[in-house]
Length: 312
Image 1: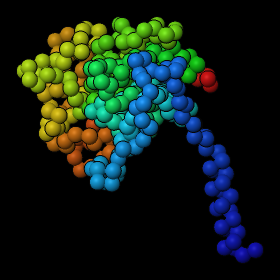
Image 2 (image 1 turned 90 degrees about the vertical axis):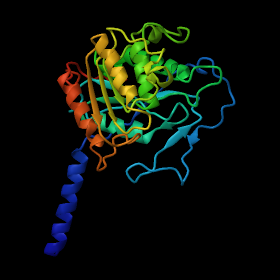
Image 3 (image 1 turned 135 degrees about the vertical axis):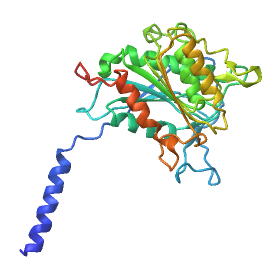
Image 4 (image 1 turned 60 degrees about the horizontal axis):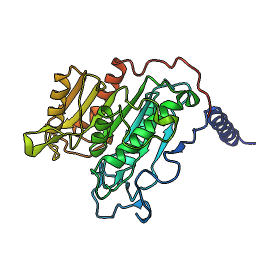
């Protein structure tokens, strides 16, 4: 056997041993939210599919999955590595104008980032598009309330801390996160089981370039579905001043939080527009995840996990 061949075989064995010692990637757990058809829904919406066309805009040079016709909402749990797991969880609400869901840009990629911080990412696939005869956010709010209630009700089985469960949303998903953060004392649907008795108030809220938080035509008053109180969760907000959705939606929401003495952190960047998710570009606004991680850490949401995880 030549020296070169011995070296190749030795390196191959070392790589195999190293890879075999790595923890296996955990398969995401998919939780169906409703037993049967979701409240008020009917058949005939059409098949769920990626609506992205070759001509659609890319973000940071990559395509975006724009999922449409969602009628079977789910919550998918992405767990961090066991040695990094803090026990905290964040429910992620992708945006898309309540018409589609940006499932990778504002969903799976966000869960991967949360995992790097030791947080379980709970990706909410809520119903879109908006249903005729209902306010645009109502079916999505039903899904969000149900999802966070289920997550908290089953927190022990999933090895999660029920007192460290936040929500993070983008654009319309940020509006959904804000509505959930202010409408948690009553369900938007008839009670089904014990999960609907569990508390569905997020412990903290992260809003990325939020939409629909104010009524432009009425001097940017807070949207009527956002009943802000002193019990609204601590909130982090990030957006760009040149956001076409209008930076006022974040500024006036922050001012309303201040009125009720709700802790918040607001970051407004000069440029960057809308819909960048966590994909880095030359724009300073795309460094916002660093600030969000610092905020969550400073608030104590990332403190070490105190219990042992149990496999469901």
